[in-house]
Length: 258
Image (cartoon, rainbow, N blue to C red; front, side, top):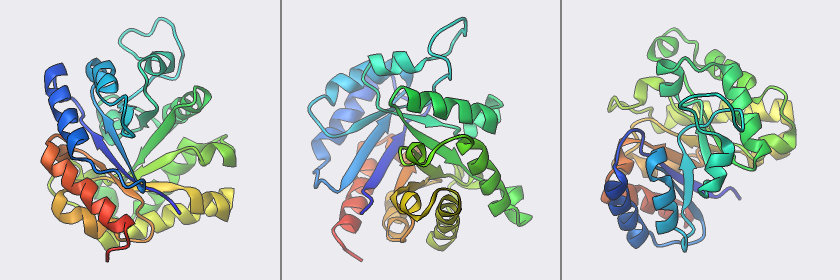
């Protein structure tokens, strides 16, 4: 059975002190039942401090980005070796904001995933369509293109090590969210595509998260869907109480509550 994953992407928020205040609140309120994996993704400047604060917990730490070379003349970039050095185990790759503002491509995302896997970092691969693409009926075409581009050249063993996050661009930071039925439809499509290329075993193993204006009042209904294995939370992960409520929704679902 796939474990539910609740991940919080803090984006460009939180100073060191603010990050520690938030993570200590999450740590104090998280009642680990062994069935829900919690991950936080602070900005780079807070990673070592958050890692230290969480050293005696099961809460995982993710970076929000990573370059695909281990070192070199790449001003402003962060390498996988640097992330490993501060105790990071997960890295978000291909977020729509990276694609939009920093012109990241499927080819670059693919390179980053391969490098992350090489250095035993778990990629959280983000894919999703724009509002225009959804309205024009191109959702599945876009998802398939991004998925194939990101996973190109990877083996079944590699794909088992990747977390996929479906984040419809039109629902990120807008207050809009896909209905559980809309999200489930895309998650089911992603799983079927993985099955077609890598087999049913890999598809059944794959963890697929939903992201896009996830809040305490919609988390439970999303997590109840068969193919939604967790959530990648943005704004609601910046406040301890709201993030803990989303974690609690995951615990309730993992306990069989319907």
